[in-house]
Structures are given as structure tokens and as C-alpha cells.
Amino acid sequence: MLTEQKVGIQNGAEATLNPTRGSRIGGLVVANGQGAHYEAASRGTIFSLVLTAWSTTIAAGNINAAAAAASTQFALWNPVGSGKNLSLLKFGVWPISGTAPVPPVFHSYSVTPPSIDTSVVNPITCNNPGLASSSVARALASAAGANLTGSTALKIIRAADLFITAGTAANLGGFKVQENIDGDIVIPPGICWVPTWIAAGTTFLGGYSITWEEIPV
Image (cartoon, rainbow, N blue to C red):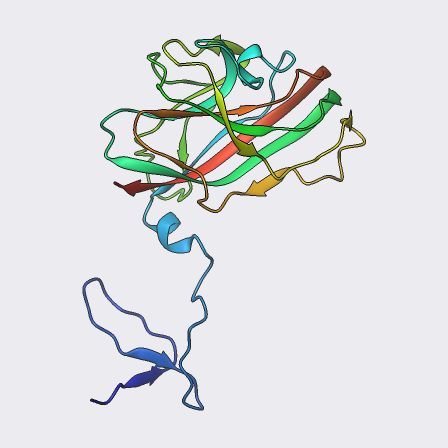
């Protein structure tokens, strides 16, 4: 059986079968045809949430092992029965003022999602601006913080790959502030994700963002 290759870019329609793509010298082209997340973003399955700045120091609910239903500034959860997993792709934290604690931020979770309704400063947005947001997720983005009513005490998943030293906001300006999670943390239905810290820091203010893909279970 011969395997045919087509040389050049292909523009296939939905549900059509195309030959593999070959180079001009007969090699099999296996390079990505576009950015890693283009396919999902173009189909409207990638979403983001942003809190541009929290207005008080790090809330008790954003500190490691936070108690159940603690006041929290930023959280994302997957409702029971959503039918989709939330695959975390990118997480950002940027310092604004004050001194950050050491070690830095962690990924934590509650085994029960909050019972509060969605309450966000900036709504969940689709990463394809041409499409309306249709996310199954719920989220909290409150500058001053609000109680995650119904959540359990938080447990740590792992540390985030971000700035790793204490320092004032000015001194942290050159540190890495966005982590490419790239899907190695999955939030299944019935789980809540929360960014947490070892302590509140010294009058430390900053902001958060999280980007995820919604994938059918």
C-alpha cells in the first residue's frame, strides 16, 4: 500500500480526509502548523480570568492550608456535573507594591467547590475574541476578597514556577511572573483551584490571571 504525501500547505474542510504533508525533497512534515494552543483557541474552548489588582494584602483564603470558606481574592472552580475538565495552561502573578513572602505562590485546591454564585470583577472571557464566552467554570475575582462559602480547607498541589525570592515590588520587576502550566494541572468537576502563599507578605499587593482549556470528560 502506497502512502501518498502532498507537498505544500493544506486547507482542509471539516470531516475531510487529507494525505500526509511532505516536504519538497520527500520528507514527512511533522512540525506544528500553528501555535500550540491555536486549535483550541480558534474553536472557543480556551478561557481566561484576570484580577488586575487586589486592594488589601493577600487574603487569608489565599494562604497555604486556608480554612474552609475563608475570604479569598482569586479562585476558579469546576461545578459538579459540568461534563468537562479544566486544563490549566497559564498562571500569572505580578507584583505591584510591598514585599512578597518567601517561598512564593503555590497551586492549591478544595475538594468541594464553593456554593456561592459567580462573582467576578472581570468576567471570564473566551480567548477567541470573535466568540462569546460559554465557559462552564465559575470563579471569584474580588479585590478586597469574599468568602468561598461551601469550600473545604485547602491542600497544596505544587509550587508555581514563578519568582522565588522575597523582595519589594520594584526588585521583583525582572523576575518571571507567568508560568506555563501547559496542562499538567487538571481541575475535574467538583474541584476548586486557588493560588496560595506561605504568608501575606509585608503590605504586598499584586494581581492574578489564569488561563485554561475546557475539555469534555
